[in-house]
Image 1 (cartoon, rainbow, N blue to C red):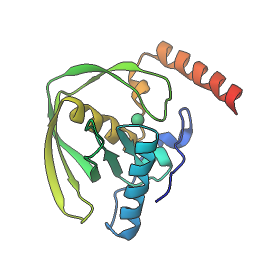
Image 2: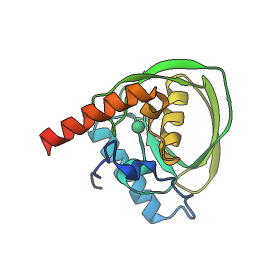
Image 3: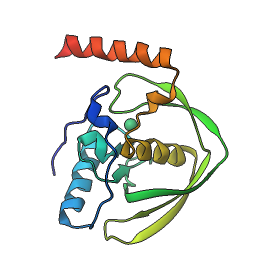
Length: 167
Ligand code: NI
């Protein structure tokens, strides 16, 4: 396994729309394992392939307390969504920024597992929010883009300044 470098906002590659995984093979299983290792090391609770500059529709997440329940979603699709909730989100691609985002409260998602078999989950709470956040990444969208233009430009300025100092 290997740790993969994570793209940081405003890297334009984060705006790439990922392509469906054509076949779940050894390469995809290796990618999922590397992404899981990268997510756990960060540490984070979710990671989309887009964030490691691989533009295929694959995401990993683990919302368990003891980090023992890795979930892999390949070609995830939101079948239905209902309700509304608001919560503070962060992102490994936007370090140090936490902002409140509106999401659907419940989502039904269909995806393929690591054996290429389809499955469905009905998610609410943190899992629902996490799935929406990660699927957004696969569509090229970063959570802070839900904020007002003013707030977004302040965050951009802050991140750019930070990048200048640390690079
Ligand atoms: Ni994120």
